[in-house]
Image (cartoon, rainbow, N blue to C red):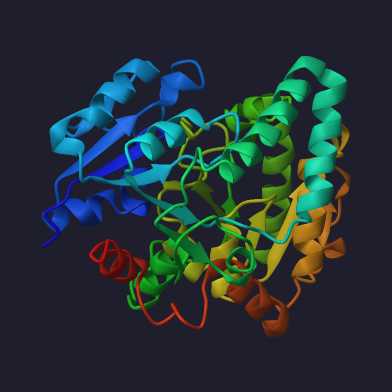
Length: 385
């Protein structure tokens, strides 16, 4: 057993999904002393999250003085800090504090997708410059400062960075040690594949919901939300077409942050935190853009990439680019569902193992880690710190 305390320092609310996917539950089951420090208030307004937990190891930190005081406490001297914060100049202060007191830091780098990073960042920067020049200047200065802090050793390297896929492994992770890892979705896929039970007995397709009309992450990127009424109307008309022509049901794999009351999808079945189970037995997958696309890739499922007229209009240089690049990478088609009146115009392609495997090893796992669970790798490595 590891006697040192594990402290999660996070800009993410502690939810059932976070606790499951970031090994909080695993560490507790292993008998480790765990604390979860929520520092969300340092970067954004207070907000609630679906599935939020209220547990005795959760602590809310409201200012940097409080954070500094906690880091200095004797019981936290030898703690291992799992950073659920991406380093940048804007968010450098927690890292600088931990560097000052020579704390051990671990980072998990995963969730990359085949989206041209440079082009995507340029489009986002252009959008921010046009819509909020002050925010653009602040972000740019913060980026420059972040690099300066590294060069001056004001921010120490991570002791370990776990990376999922060759894409992230090829990037300088600013770490003393880089360890091959699996995306949490890959571990869920492995677990579900071993079972034989089905959630839905009849034939069905699954929609990977991203909670688009209510997605709080859009605010972070300065993007507007779609109209809930027109969005759900477009989706339901399309799902009706699919169900009538193919004699299947469309099931909703709800985004973890969603709070649907079942009216949005015309009383179609909605499941939360069961995406791995749903994709495993689906006939095909329907999506916009989502890291949950990994389940379609791992199960070699045909995938329909869809969008609406409104999405095309307001996300032309953001989400629409992502949809296009994902579809192109997997050699799948994308459809404007507001222009579909005849389902015969849709081609449910058989997946290419070549393209799907390329995605798998670039973004989800590696030859070094695919036969292990990430929890095993996680435990093995932090035991050595």
